[in-house]
View 1 (spheres, rainbow, N blue to C red):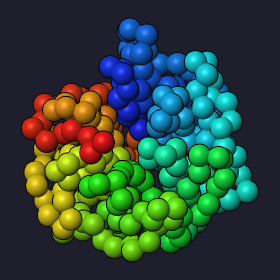
View 2: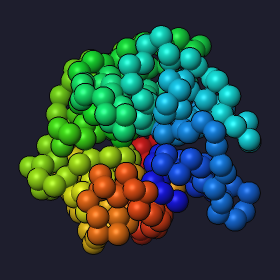
View 3: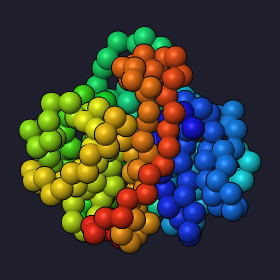
Length: 273
């Protein structure tokens, strides 16, 4: 596995997307295996009816998994301005997905991204503008707070979710550079009743934070934590990247990255749902 994103636990199985290796990984059928894909998802989520959906990174659409490929569930091409990133959903079938805004791998200039909301009927709305490198997404607390990791701003930003799914009340949830250190670049996140777990990549730690408070931090040594999720109990799954001692950008460009999944037993891992 090259770069493991969007880990999700569903009915006793782990699913994740290898965005750089072009595979969907799962142990749903027993052995842990990678399924080669022509179209690559980034963020993954399970709809209320149990179907797996993926944010198709370079195709600007949401795909639904058929067992062999991701068929189109919602077309975002008229709205999205860049590659798609992480994704999260609510019990009503709304999906929130990162519109990163620019393709770094293609040498495009950096510009702010957005959050898009895909309603249960397939309608696509711009939920938030001016989000700098939007990354991990999670619903915190009672589900009325949506948290997004702004990677280059080194912080988690929160929004209040209105009854119609609109996002209001933008605010800083956690200044990670202040709480953890200047090397932090938040990627995947996972919400629990006790706060939000953050994979900090170059911060070399997985940290549990509450609003403007560091609860605990688990160091990952030389490995870079990419994303995380729990099984609803005390187990936290974390994807960890080994860059073979190279700077991350160089390792990604030369495909020198190798990702493994670590299982951490933590007292405060469970879902908010």
